[in-house]
Image 1 (spheres, rainbow, N blue to C red):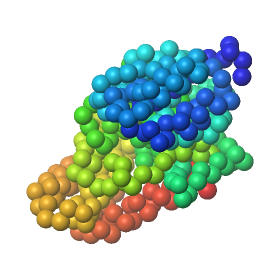
Image 2: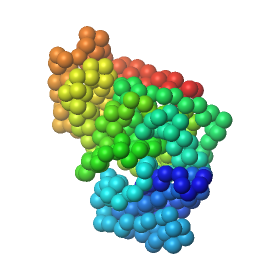
Image 3: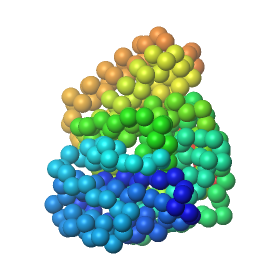
Length: 327
């Protein structure tokens, strides 16, 4: 594509990904959309990543490197947001891969549909399950911000990756520091809520590396941090008087509390204190008076039959995600 095309910034937080960094950067520099600013943020990585980043910058003038003390992925992304110059910005994690035309397709989705945000489906992959880029299924859907927020987890809403944001849509947004889980969602949901039109490309163009030893691959109490984000989302939509989204988030919040109870009982036998805290959160939520009768009935059912509620809720989400993707 010609250089007069808008500059698109790609922010890549880098930490202890020595084995995966080169393939990731290669998938970025080989994008069909050429007018890129690629920002590799070395988050104080203790391995060879810092020198690998510098080596890439010497090879490709579009690459800039930010070296900083370790502060976590959110702090690294914020460091990229501090310096990016693009008209648009996207985020890619340094152990993941992207289709060679992802940026071009997402940019075209914004321009052709008058949208400030575009997004695509994600696909998990591992050494035993390679990426499958369905190039023949690039159908688009135009979704409202209300719909995306109502079906937040079915629309890949929490992830800042797999999305292209116009600079004006980001509008000074920052990632929350010190939160182990849910920090991504805290960044994305206010941006998505503000959009009248979001272009959703049904094709998988972002490939998320499955790592059993990662924060999401094993269970730890740090994952309870996501409940803080859900609490903030509830308050946000309540203040905005967004009843439809609020009711959907009430059920999401309740289901995730139940899911954490299940995981704690399975993985952390004897953690009575956190189970009691989660039980109290469920009761407090169920006793709120500002949601619909349907939501109240579902919560009552969930209190009586939590495991059945959990299975049915997440099974429904899996089905909705497939419908949104058109598969």
